[in-house]
Length: 150
Image 1: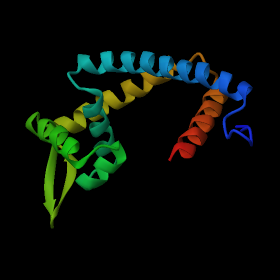
Image 2: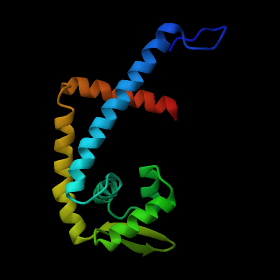
Image 3: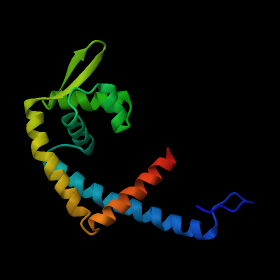
Image 4: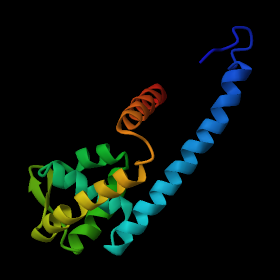
């Protein structure tokens, strides 16, 4: 981004492109999130619960704190999610010293095998307006933006 060296503000061209780009990004995100949330609602899972299912299913035995870090939520938030999912028979905690390791139950494995491919197919459908090359380019640009904000 070009910055005026006297005022330390983005130049007018950069600034005028930033706001509409951000608005389009927000709008696209909300439309995709709405479609995915509706799909998950059919299976009575929230987006957060699906994220736990996908993360634990991908790396069973992870520590509870590692899950919180991956989801970028607090330890308290992940505890509440896990409590509900344990009550529903989807995940289980196994004590390992002072930490909990996380595993899917038999029900959790069935959900994982059923839902993850369906979810991935829906994401592919929603992004199909972009060619695979455009999707990779968008991914690179979003990664660059994400890293600049860290």
